[in-house]
Length: 338
Ligand code: 5GP
Ligand code: MN
Image 1 (cartoon, rainbow, N blue to C red):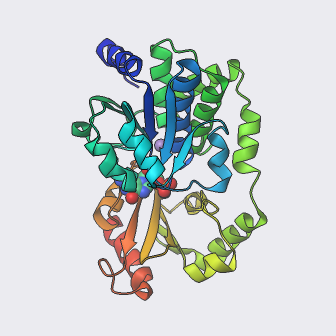
Image 2 (image 1 turned 90 degrees about the vertical axis):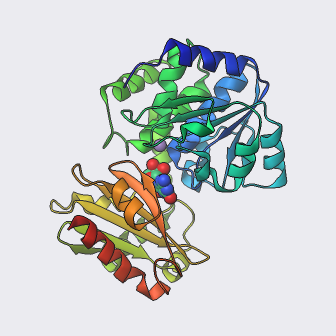
């Protein structure tokens, strides 16, 4: 990871000092790193500096990760009037774990049109720098949570335990519990957070050992009925009937997309979940040498990281009907992998 410039750090401190109410935003379908980085930022601002900071999410997080935002952290979910009113009244706006306001969906227009200074803290490629007054963008890092950890460390911030725990949780989910994107700096961060008293065992239990039975059952269905493997490509499609049959909640299929990568010859794995309104959400994971991000940009209106990306298939645009989705996916993966 590159070091931050003195100018960046001084600007951050000055912008935070000059503001009282701070809106901390993150991306739609928030994952653990989105919640970890945003709520850690809010904890530092509130408990460390006495600011009125709140976390604003475009939509609901999954049940299994919502614990990452501490109970006492002011939280707005969805672009309802209260959220938009807090956002338009904020004297500082911070976006974490997304490369631009477009990824905040219903919050984007209000955020962009605010006169408040805006700060970006992100680890995706292609930051929309023109939307921000101050940009911390670094891709050689595990997570936005890790990036924020090193920023806070560099400004000599005192990190409340809530803040430190949220950062540990965010980094843990984005590295898939240290299975990928783990840098020397990531392990240093983990070590320092453990020394600071973060209960990592508890975080791991909450993240990986607190699900419902359905979570394991749907994994079974996906790996038997759902999985298709063809050369270096693997894909699983979860239709809405099956979602209903298993009474699935948000986040309960998180991580399943990684499983086909345990097959030696598979280089690219896709998980496609049917949502409401003619949209299929796409998750992609790949092995080094194959860019999940590029595949998502070319075929699924999305983006992300080299080895982990996401996007969507739109009925009426990419395909005429939901029945054509399996064919579209197969064709896209095969074309991409050549
Ligand atoms: P996931 O598969 O866990 O939903 O997403 C994996 C990665 O891809 C995350 O870093 C996420 O931010 C990114 N990602 C997911 N969906 C989209 C999307 O629609 N657009 C872009 N640009 N990135 C996405
Ligand atoms: Mn992230």
